[in-house]
Length: 152
Image (cartoon, rainbow, N blue to C red):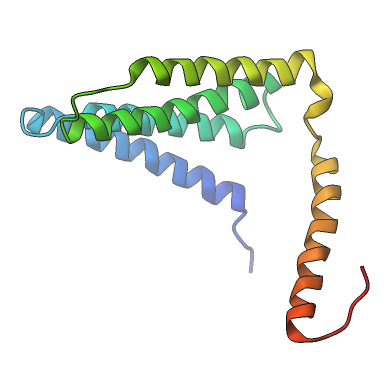
């Protein structure tokens, strides 16, 4: 029996996020007078769907799109969800300037560490290589909790 790839399952979930955004837009058109912030929730869903789709295509597209643009869209989605909640509860103070500063500064920091100082980003093989000793340490901690002896 074949198993479903994790990336495929996440890509399908990202499609459902986009469909949910379409549903929220249609729902907001009908009841926009009684609920504030539904359009922002829908835009946040679209932003998250675009960001995660670009992130899942990391092996197939340019690094500019897969890291810079994808992370910016994901952060924009989180910011839009935050502002949609504020609008939904009719909160009077909306920190829009702080959100714009956060978005721009994150984009600039990602650009700096991607293009100006690229040795800070790890390749996939380095990430796997560094994750293996961490997994071994977790395994040693479980052995220690069970009362078995081990060597570091």
